[in-house]
Image (tube, rainbow over all chains, first blue to last red):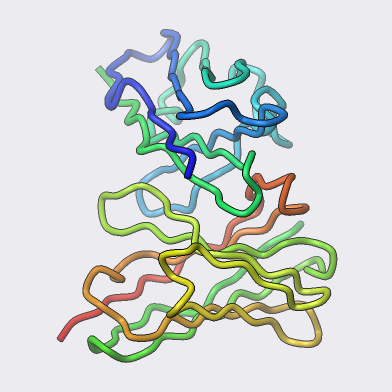
Length: 109
Length: 120
């Protein structure tokens, strides 16, 4: 099973700042099959990025993803109050087993 | 607009079974994969398994394959997740989510979630 390790566990920033979230895979992901989700309390996850760098429909360009192999990054520029949430990465490189990272809690400083 | 709508919260006894529905609104599941993902309180997301409504093929996470059954109805607008021999550690929010294929395995959309509480 591919293990995803996200860092940091908690990130404290202020609105207007830039957030950089990391996701590292225990083995190289084929075709950069990695997605990022945002989850707010009491809500289902929302897809932000797939295939490591493609924004999902309706996601603003303040959200961007980059990476390949085992190291992936989600960057959020000009943080808005609505961006503070938990962010998960997910790999689908092994189509018979999908795994998620443990999450990064982006909180208001 | 594609939506997945799940059945309501359940409270179950240890050792019993639970069956949750997931209905597609605004589109057919025919040529998409339908996954189940759960989230225990304060924990990360755990993928459970998928079904292809077109032919009913399924694949389950190894740790759950003895207790998990995913089915769909012939209209291909609804899928079901049944988990048997419930334990306290099965207490979680259960989500259904859709993907284009097993390899294009990002999940969008998601259902709203169904809370399952297991107690003795």
